[in-house]
Structures are given as C-alpha cells and as structure tokens.
Image (cartoon, rainbow, N blue to C red; front, side, top):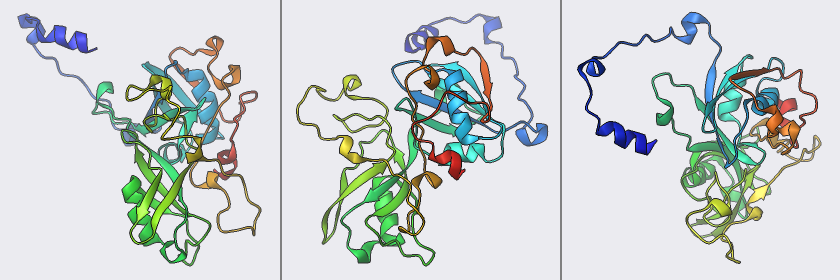
Length: 296
C-alpha cells in the first residue's frame, strides 16, 4: 500500500484524470431504516473468516436474530446487527477474542476510509488487589481506571460500597501501550492487577494484538518474561448469596473459540462476500466461554 502511494505521488495526471466527479452518499440509517453496523478488526497472523465470525459472535451479540458479516480484506469485517442491542453489546462489551486472537469492534463511520479507521482501544474489566478497605470506593476506582486506561465504571453494591477481595473496574485500554502489571498507591505501595478474559498478548512487550514470536521489541526466546499468563483471570459463576460479584459475563464479556471447523478457521468454511447467521441456528460451533449468551 505504501509503495502504491509513492507511485501515485510521482504520476503526472491527465486533464481528464484531474477532473473531479461528485459522489452520492446514501441516506442516513434513520431515514432508510437500515440496521446498525460496526467495523471489526481481527488481530491475527492468520485470516479470519466471515462465516466463523457470523456464526459465533452472532449468537453472543444477537442471540435471537444473528448478524451479517462481510469480509473487507486484511482481517477487516463489516458487522450488521439484526437485533436491537446487538451493536451496543459489541462495542461496550468485551474484550472479544476469536480463537484467542483479539477482535476490536468500532462504530461504523461512513465519512472515513478503511485505512483511516482506528482499532486501538478495547474495554476490559480489571481487578486491583491488596488495596486497603478504605480505598475500595468509586473515587479510587476512577483514579486507578484513568491511570491504567480510561475509566468506565466500577463494580459496586447498591449502597455504593465496593469493598471486596479486589476492586473491580471497567476501563478502556489503549492497545498501543503495554499492560499494567500493577499500580503503586501513595503511602500503600504496590497493588497487583489482573485482567478478566484477556485475549492473546505478548509476554515480551506486554501489548495486546500479537504474541512473542511476532514481537519486534524484544527476544521472545528470553527466559525471563516481564509479562505472563499470571495477568489473566477467567471468572466462573457464583451462586446467589456468595458475594456481591455474581458473574463477570453480565457486565464484560469474552468469546473464545476452538481452532477447528466449529471455530471458523477451517478452509472449508471460508465465506465470500457477506454471510448471515442467526443465533438460533448455531449447533456445533460451541464456545469455550458462553456466559454472555445467558446474561444478555
């Protein structure tokens, strides 16, 4: 793409080529009643397939009606939602992963070109450990959240208290920055951080979106990793009455698929163009973590 842009920069355009034509924009979604759409990017060295994505994330985002998914090349996809609330779940839920690879979803912006879209942020629930009970509140959560990323909300009781084994905060992470392994609290010292349902990330540089063998910032063969699987936590359901926090899937979420035919990576399942899948029709393509299908 860069070589093509360099070539175009040196071309001498003819008079007809310089003469501009006027494009026609489609009417807005509210005027035409078109269903809501988003754009998605799969951070993987392998090609993702519209069929697999439509079958799997469709059942999570729109469990009754499903979604349409269209391949746009370079692991970019156009998602069309056939059920109210699906777009909101796709954008504000997460983090999403497909076969362990990070999937970032952003709003559809008809004013932008594909190359202008930015897939740089992802919502995730973090857990902050070893805080004094008196600091387990929304004010502290907001400060920590804005340090780690951008604060969204804190998991708290109806009375506003957030006291528990850990302080649970939902943040927007910038994937261009390494993950925080913890945070230093003035007067209290170091507090560990863990991330719920974290997709694949690099144990060398700490960035989401690639793994060690694809890292350009360090030697993936080093014995001493600065980051590791210990940053992850995959919550399980709690029975009612066992505590404030009931189910991570009801507020944040994740999708992880098997890398076989049911996960959408089989070459025999490769879709061309647009693929539509209903949340009702999915059979064999079961997910490893399906808590959101019940919560939503």
